[in-house]
Image 1 (cartoon, rainbow over the protein chains, first blue to last red):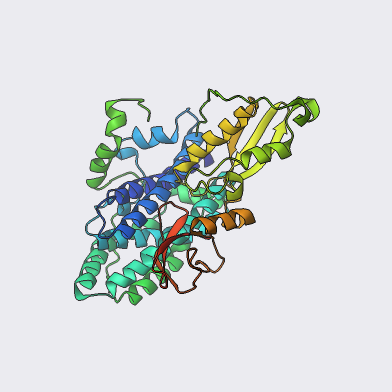
Image 2: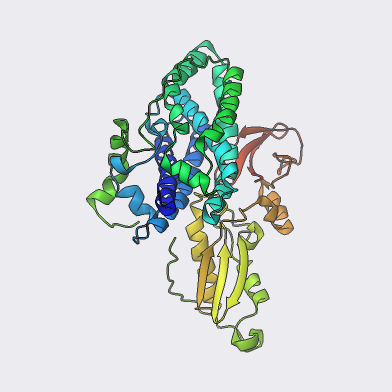
Amino acid sequence: MEINDALFQFATRLGDNTLILGHRVSEWCGHAPVIEEDIALANTALDLIGQTQFWLGLAAEIEGTAKTADDLAFLRDAWDYRNFLLVEVPNGDFGQTLMRQFLFDAWQSIHLPRLIASSDARVSAIAEKASKEVAYHVERSASTVVGLGDGTQESHDRMQAALTYLWPYVGEIFDTDDVDDTLAKAGIAVHPQSLKDEYYALVNRVLKDATLRVPDDMFAHKGGRSGKRHTEHLGHILVEMQWLQRAYPGSTW
Amino acid sequence: MGISLLKCSGFNAPTPDRLGKMGRPEISDIWQWLDAVPDPEIPVISLVDLGIIRDVAWVGPKLVVKVTPTYSGCPATSIINFEIEKALRDNGIDNLVLERQLSPAWTTDWLTQKGRLKLEAYGIAPPQAAGGPERCPHCQDVDIERISQFGSTPCKAQWRCKTCLEPFDYFKCI
């Protein structure tokens, strides 16, 4: 596989993850249980959308067809998206949103600091920038998961239900293909499998503090990062996110 | 990210004695002009105080200004670029380019000392290496608690003073 083809896929995957999760989290704006949480969710979404501009900007630069990050975000259809299925599942209740956030933040908080050592200066610079923001995200989502998991019977039950629902979407994070092998060999990216032990150690520690039971079944839904099979939810997100550019092509703010 | 072109009404041509070699304004003067540009969200400090202007240099006839974002998604970034360009054009510099510099990533260590003092006087606790404010910016008491890791802008968190009971913003340390 050509390095540039792999790098385009890689940047698209990272940008699509932060774009779709950023959009999902922004759906909470004005609806969170308390104003501080509303602000926290909006700020997290903002950081994720900002990171998207960097990753999709890099993808567009590599593609070299004068497209922009906006073009990639607003003019691709579901089958061209490369995000984990985890980030496209519905928000559910506040607990489910924060559980999903923690499962994603935990991965970012381990992945991005490692990516700073990338041999590609552009990848390294984005990873350096984003990892600082992610340190805040994971601190908040982890402490909220513990607070709600080890909270009232009601909050505990909801967090357990959220974990049971989301757990089958975690395994895809460590799925690998030619893109990962090519970039890991070139020193540009970190092989997903090499993050696995540290990830599960962090997640299991936090979930234990949250008094939650980690499901035994390690079955994983896959198809998001490869683009082979997204959930039915992605199309609905794109319709909402893209309708303005689709209805009025090229319109600007 | 595109930088829009501006039409400037208040054009102030630099006086001849302020011009350096080759008729270009001196870099030290340019830093002073930029130090007069307020941050759009926290107008009490300047863009230079914020530490986001990383370099100002003449490359031939062109002025190159390197700017680093505070947070990836900070919506003030495009306004900041607009304000920088406006300040420079107002001072007679027409041939300029703004470049985004991501690495090294912005850190609150780059806030100037005068910026930190101005923040506190304005009611925003300046960043501390310990990860939380040193004291309440209103009554200076140290009996404080965190309300949320996030605040009114990406760069701030919400804290509260348990003595004067006032909530306050804390400029996060990153």
